[in-house]
Structures are given as structure tokens and as C-alpha cells.
Image (cartoon, rainbow, N blue to C red; front, top):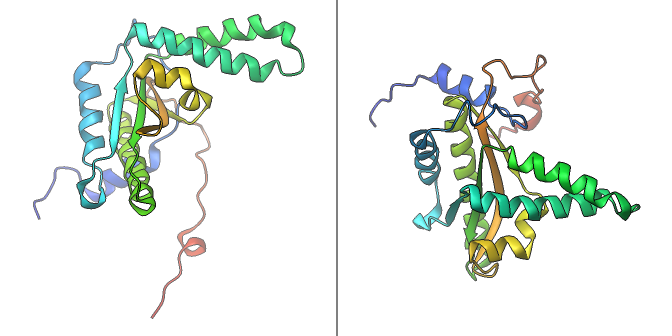
Length: 203
């Protein structure tokens, strides 16, 4: 096995420091370079997958698609917020629309659906690994990401915009990506249970 430039300490540090990010720098001032995005996609497609099914599909939203998705997002968001008071719908809709449009880059991730339930489960695991790879590469390049599984990925309008059918490709996540401040990590990092609490050794 060939050695790689990154050492054990650096790799573990990268994994431990990765965070989900909800706030991004202004993309007009801090744009995402196309090479940086390609690096994330390259990392993603090298995720492990049984029998090389390569079940992932990535849909990179340009400004036109992002604006259309913003309307789907805002509608879902506003309807949820105004279940008890529909009169506030427009106010919440506009706020949600502005929030979504401010996301520098939106990537939708789909899983190719097969009939075999075991393969389908394996493929979902592979797609999750691909998203983790994507996220780690993004973090290494000073980009933050949120993997969202909100209503937008289950909305029929989203499938129509992407020209896909849910029985063939199921959307499993919306990745919201953007440049972040170097010191954006929380002061108190999230805790993990000790290895001893989650690991059982057998003879």
C-alpha cells in the first residue's frame, strides 16, 4: 500500500474538527472555486460501495435552478410555520426565500433505486459515505456544509425541476455549501461518548 502525504494525526484532526455549518460568507466576496467543488465531488465518488454500484448522483444548482428551488423551500417552510395562522404565510415565505437564495452553493444528492432491498440498503450507506467524503474535503478547503434532509428533497416539484422520477432516483439530501470563517467552530466542541461506552470486545 502506498503512503499518502497526510499522517494519522492530521487525518484524525480533520475528522474531529469537521462541523455542520449554517452560516456562510457572502459568495460574491468569497466565491467557491470550481476546482474546489470538483475536489469535493472527486472525494465523494471514491467512497466505498459494494460491487461498485456507484449509486450516487449529484445535481449542482446554478442560479436559475437555485431560485426555483428557493420557491419550493420557502413554500414548505412558510406552510409549516403558519399552520395555526395562515395570515403570516407571505412574511415567512419571503424570509425563507431570502435565506435560501443566500446559500452560496446548493447540491442535491440522489440515490439510484434498485429492486433488491439489501442492495438498496447498501447503496444508501455508500451514498452517506460519499456525502461524508464530500464534507471532509469541503472542510479541508475552508468550506462549511450542511446536509439537509428537509421537505425540499421529498417535494414532487423538486423532482420535476431535476427531471427525475422518485422510483428511479431518490433524493437523500440537499448539501448547502459555502466559504466560512476560519474560527467559526463553537467554543465548546460537541461531546462524543468515550470509546469504552460504545465498543464491546470479544475473545
